[in-house]
Each structure stands twice: as structure tokens, then as C-alpha cells.
Picture 1: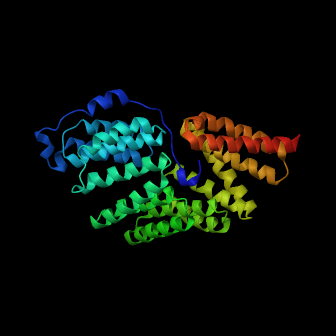
Picture 2: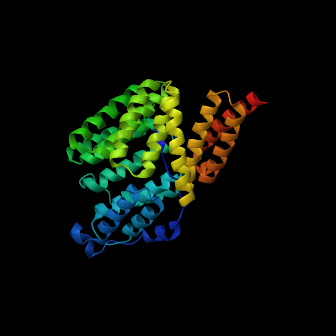
Picture 3: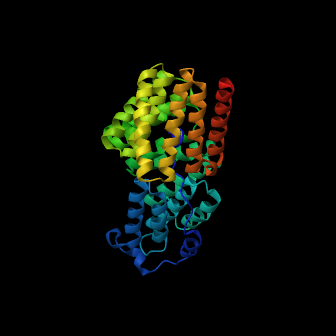
Length: 340
């Protein structure tokens, strides 16, 4: 998937039982300190799983947190995060009831719950196509988070302004805000994401030299703090920028190495998530074949890439998946015609 919107799409689970669980009423344990509150513990578990990319397991933990006793902020945050897991699956309608439930207890006077809920509301606005509303909400939330010293969340909000905005200068402004804040805090993980965002924004403008510089920095940070999957994705993004900026040999070598690792990961665990990156890297290698005037080999490679992306679930990725598949099919038709 494109760097700015790297999403893992997982199967839906627990919705019916979890929606029923959401109806539980507050008890005397709502006043428990966070250190003793089961909903806080489950919320923290969900956050850890979310950061590991285990979205299905994270949604389960968040749904359990909604039904557990403890402070209101954890209830609100958990509702918001279940909705966010649904948005990652393209299930906005399934996620909206969770937002409505969370808003019954959300309060501007309770920063943790309010901040998380506003973030997810903005994500839903963006995914529903109302980018202007999402940008406005994120900009207001950025100021709110800074006021309440939620610095890590403020960086996340800056990241989401970039995702929601269609204006290149605005994307650059908010990427730079996030980078500066992350540098001040020594947050390498965020620096990896934000430099990746900058590369993607430059890529969208066809500024491949600038994209190459940004993706190089992103890769360096991903290799410092990322897991093997994020390293693989960072290499894919940089390899594409190398090819498009004229560094063809470097791009092909990087793509071949990354593709071999992707195939190895898929062989060890043939999951949709791993199939996705076999598909995208096979697509990239097909573009190298096309550059070498090997149209038949390029078309064959795109067919292999398409099969893997379908296995990864691209047809269920909503509008983005349909657009990506149409782009691949158009390229395949072009290459097949050139090779005939």
C-alpha cells in the first residue's frame, strides 16, 4: 500500500458480543486509581498490541476494557480505539456506535479520554471523505494536546494532519512541526514515521529527489527502532524513490534483497499481511523489468504481484484498494500490450 497509508486489514471479530458489553453501567470501582483499574490495564494491553500491528488482538483487548470497571477516561479511550480498529478494516459503520458510546462519557476536562476520542473522530471524518473537517479537528486537537502536555499525542496529531491534508505546503508545514517536536523529545519511532510522511508527500508531487532524501532518513530511523516488517517497508519505499530518481541499479538491488526477505517471511508465516509485501515488492521488480525493455517478464511479474495482493485482501480495502487494483490492472494491460 502507499507509504502514507500503510494499513494492515484484518478480519472482523467480537462485534456483536462487544456491542452488548458496551452497555454496562458504571460502578463504584470507577473511582479506582489507574494503577488498580482493570480497564486501564486492558487499555494498555490494547495499546501494546496496536503498536505491534496486531490489530485483531488489540480490538479484543479494547472491547474488554470497555466492559471493565475503572475510570471514565479509560472507557472513552477504549471505545475510541475499538472504533479505530474498525476503521483500519474499512468498517466505518461498525465503528460509529463505539464513538457514540464513548462520547456519552467524554469531557474536555478529562484530557486523556477527550484527546483520544477527538483523534478517532478526525480519522473517521477523513476516511468518510471530509478532509477539511478532519484537518480542522486535528489542528484544534494539536493545540489542546500541547496545552495539556500530551506531547506524544500532539506529534501523532501532526502526523494525521498530513494524512488528511491535500495541500502540499500544509503537509510540509505539519510534517516539520512533528519532526521538530520528535527531535526535541528524542522520539526516533516518530521520526521514522514523519520522515516517511514527508517522502510520501514529495512523491505525490513527483518530487522524487526530495522523496529519496526523506525516505533515506526514514529508513535510517526504521532500522534503529523498527521491527523487521517496518524495515522491509522502509526498503520498499526507498527502492521506489531510487528507481524514480534515476538510481536504478541501487533500487533494483534493494528491491531484490527486500523481496527475498518478504518471500522468506511469507514462507514462514503465509498471512495476508506478509502476502501484501511480497505483492508490492514483486510489483516493484516488474517495473525494473519494464525499464529493461523486458515487457513479457514485467507482465508476468505483475500477474504474480496481483495474485499476492488479492491474497492479502486488496479487494476488501475499500476505495483505496479498488484504486490500487485498477492502477495495477491498467499497468498490466499496458505491459501486456507492449509485449504482444
